[in-house]
Image 1: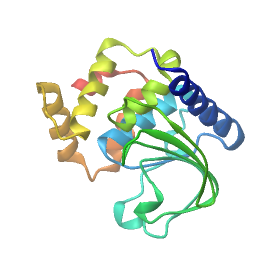
Image 2: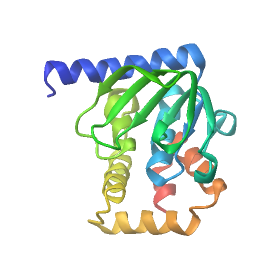
Image 3: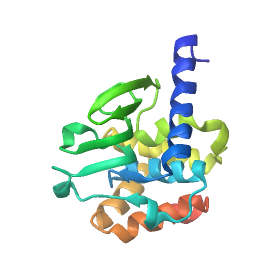
Image 4: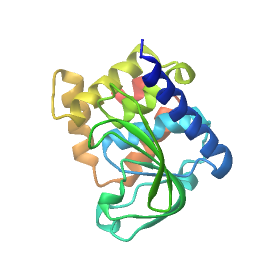
Length: 193
């Protein structure tokens, strides 16, 4: 069980995200890697958003420099990637350590909440919303594999298969949106296929 400070940050991170979505909607701009896709899908599950292409964008890495983002949840897209934050934004990231949720006004951090123990941004989102998500064993196995993949550690067959499938399709935005759709439908077996 987390200590008082860690529990307070976890609850504050959750509240920050919920309040942000209540104020600005579930607009998400995300890194398009496997970790970012799954974190985004989990956020969509939490916020019950099904209009994927309207609320989720995966900018190409070459388009990040100078990209202005406004009133969005940013998944692994910190200022160091060349973006410009306008108005209010929330960053969810685990690079560099520690895993955290940060609230921004313009390019300035207003609040930062550390969520210890997450090895990927997908597991960060899962840790924050574990009670709401209530994921199956299969879903948790997939997140564990993503933790391994994101850390360059291929412990098992699932890690290698998921990473290989992603690499084959990594430039395909349709693959990203198909994965998001499967996550929203909780089609974990379909993802494994």
